[in-house]
Image (cartoon, rainbow, N blue to C red; front, side, top):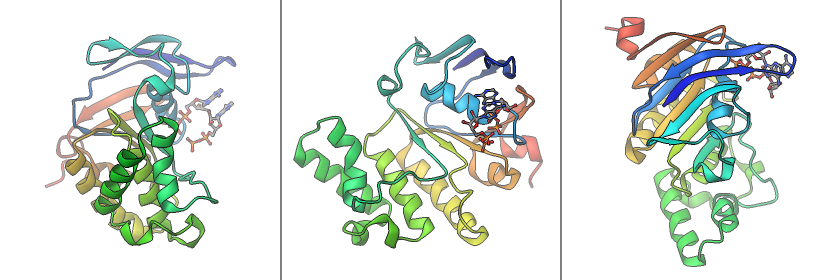
Length: 222
Ligand code: ADP
Ligand code: ADP
């Protein structure tokens, strides 16, 4: 629940003006709009990378905007993947669980599970440099999934892929999201992505929510 959230940067830029949105459990929710409309800023505030100027963000009735990012149990997937180049796929995926000091057996099991789901089992011993763009993207997802976060936040995760792979990954991502049943907030400037991926879409324009609805309602797809 995002309640009248406003963000003003120190230089006076008002990136968001009283934005309110209700996002449901398990929903695949898309934030779409032109460059500079405030999408990344909103995502950064939800995950805790950016302070809120005014308003509240609540999860299950609890106000989270004062919490540390690590206490929010949300996983962010960036467009640059940010994989560790010196680590194998297995080590990359295990890393968040190692940081959380989970037992070795649990780490092994969760990595195995995520790898199977993402069709990465055969690649677990490889380093990121030897993987394709789509495979790297799946490893980045795997690293986010193993922690079983309360929500996934994705900032244009497909924008570094070529057009064909992008369309393919879109379908995969939509399927994966439904299988995981984890609330997902996905930022894009691409309307066709918004139409095909999301359960619901919010259109942002100059820091304000213009419209919220299903793709069918917003784009009148047949
Ligand atoms: P989007 O993700 O939709 O492209 P952003 O959230 O990155 O938009 O930016 C929203 C607005 O806030 C833009 O006008 C941008 O220039 C401004 N902005 C973003 N970060 C900062 C910052 N650190 N300081 C000042 N202005 C910023
Ligand atoms: P995006 O791909 O999300 O649109 P941008 O190129 O707008 O990214 O922003 C890249 C980075 O620069 C972000 O960390 C953002 O916070 C920062 N930024 C954007 N606009 C400004 C600004 N006007 N002043 C200071 N920092 C900014």
